[in-house]
Amino acid sequence: MWLRGLLVVALSGGAILSAHAADQSVPRGPSYYPDSYRPTSIDWTGWYVGVQLGGAFGNASGLSASPKPAGIIGGGQFGVNWMRDSFLLGAEMDFAGMDLASSATDGAGFTHRVSAHWLSLITGRAGFAVNQFLFYAKGGFAFGSERNTVVNPAGMLADSGTTTQTGWTVGGGVEYAFTPHWSARLEYDFVDLPSHGIVLTGPTLGSQPANIDFTIQKLVGGVNYRF
Image 1 (cartoon, rainbow, N blue to C red):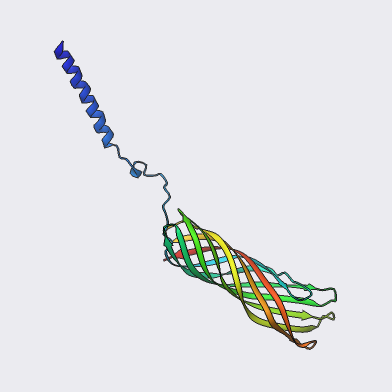
Image 2 (image 1 turned 90 degrees about the vertical axis):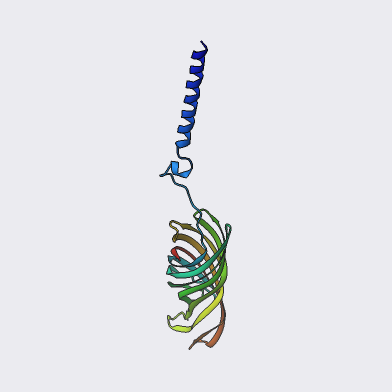
């Protein structure tokens, strides 16, 4: 009887040891599911270059009529980022061509035309990264072309003035890194180009200073490559 009991204990112990060994042989951790998707954090630190394309619309106020031009905007950007943990600081410069043009007529029959053909922003950026996503805000300096023209009620050119204006900008966006080097983003920017002291020259008024506040809002999508 005691021999039978000893045999049962030995067999039971062997079965337990065999099960434990089999359990230890099963791979654990990420390699157990080699095809599973696990998001990885992206290091946004470093230089980048990219392109952008979207739409822009503006408003030119200050004269009796306020035209509201709209059009397509497209160009490129380059910048640099520094990361600490999930927080980001950066600097960026972009340059975009556009074809904003519009006119409006006041009650006296004078028509104010405004047009702009390029825009450049030099900004600082601050953001927060979550896995492949970067949420950021930006602000800084703006530079752009601007031409204002006044046409009299008879349809003849009265006065015009062309200038490169300086101002400020604020904006923000979200960027998604779909590879370690490539990312796509969507961004909104508000630009204010206060045209104080612009001179309209022509046969009607001679040289007439005018204060025109020209604002532009743009929404662009872009793709960046990080080095």
